[in-house]
Image (cartoon, rainbow, N blue to C red):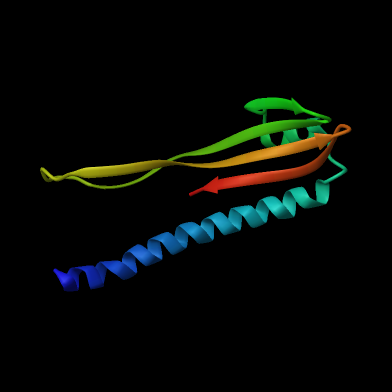
Length: 113
C-alpha cells in the first residue's frame, strides 16, 4: 500500500502543478490585456471585450462591473465499480472592473481551473 502512495504522489503533484500553471497563464493574459487600458477604456469598451456584466454596483464614486466567464465543467472520476466516485468543478474567470469618471480605474480577477 505504501508503494502505491509513493507512485501516485507524483501524479497528484503534476496534476495540481498543471492547474496552477493554467491559472498563472490566464492571469498574465488578463494583466497584459487590461493594464494598458487603465484610465483609457470605457465601460462600453469592456462590455465589447467581455460581454454583459452579471452585476453592476455603484459604491461611492466608483462603478463596479462583475463579469463571470464560464468555460464549462471539468471533472475527474472513476466508474465501473461499486466504489465509483466523481468530482467536477466549473472552470471560470471572475473579473471585477472598477470605473471612475467613466474610465477603467482598476481590476481584479479570480481564475478557477
